[in-house]
Image (cartoon, rainbow over all chains, first blue to last red; front, side):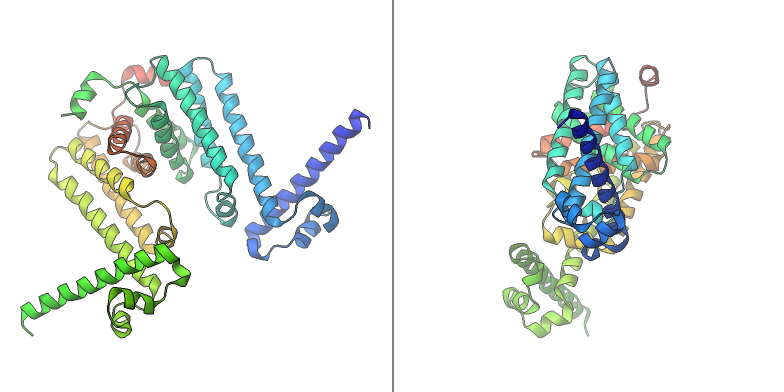
Length: 199
Length: 199
């Protein structure tokens, strides 16, 4: 088969899958996971049941695939944000701002979120995210811009937990301040702080 | 009835309730919420079924009461930690260290935790906790020991989320470092930081 045919078929498959996934998320959000059927999804997405089954075996797999694509896109966006900045401290800041904004925009609850977050791919994504943050922290620590009295792994834990507060915030400005505060926790400690803290 | 009788009866009731709650948590942890019955609990706790029903209507209410007592004790311990310190910055540090250690020691998952955390009393406890932290932050900010460019409410969100990382840590020393890092995020910003951050 000519290459063009392959490419347009890929684009077609992708478009069908996207339509199926968006339809499913909307239906489950409205009616609940237990009451949404493959037939309903096929009908709403405007494709035959047989075609739907060629793409997905069940409703759950549609939601998982949908969430996996989002997670992959988010991780890709964070890597890009890192690569577009040049100095280590700017790379760190770009990754943390990017993550805080993803958390801010992400729906926090609902059945779909609860269901997809139990899946194995989420654990793997969290590990990749932790690694990405740990690496930019280590790089910035080597450049002297981040404290070196706490390991990059522990600092990454701190950052990811602190920035998860973005999920409950109500404005972009508040998200910006949260990142500022989180970043200040990473700065090399001052002599007078050390004295005050270990009184 | 004489006062002593009342007091010893209260102590007795309390001891029975405590035994019932510990038994229930252990049974549910071992066999799962769905398969534990009131009869089993009565038998294991060494009391009659009728006596058990005088204290609790069902297994769920035993778990909720057990968790409420823990939460109340934790909040009490944090208020005490605050009151035992004198300077505002020491009060803030005492509350944050106390909270981090409670989070560190707390079982993170399992069916019991998932069940009790859906209850209304947890939302109320979280609000009380947020208020406690917000107040010590506001006090320390007024004393000039905490940044005043971000509101105490937002800083309390930041602290509680950052310190939730303690749940995944593996040593008291790591918890101590997490509190140090979180506290540095609260310090009044330095002029050179402001320049670096708003490049």
